[in-house]
Image 1 (cartoon, rainbow, N blue to C red):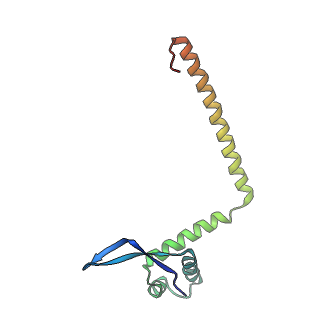
Image 2 (image 1 turned 180 degrees about the vertical axis):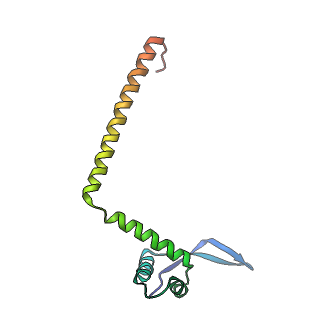
Image 3 (image 1 turned 90 degrees about the vertical axis):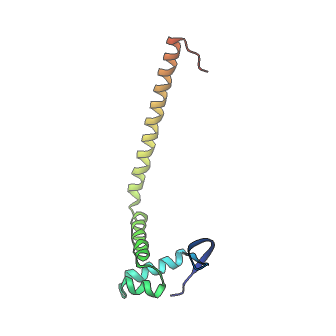
Length: 117
């Protein structure tokens, strides 16, 4: 597995005897390959972490994130339409409430004789 690692020069992770150790960033392709290797279950997470020179907790985090986002991606499209309808209904309710509050404010201004505009 080829490593696609980029090193950021501006963010030191820690200073060890005046030598700066740079924080590593990994491309999406690299993370995908790592997660696919984990899902194959041919090697333990510890073995993969050692091979890839990554902390095992990072691999577990990537796996969890990938599975959560994959579930969301594959969610039934018919249900998504329901969420959009809910949001449209909620927006309509909020506009209705704004209208009612505006009307009440106008009425209160007239009754009290206050001119705020």
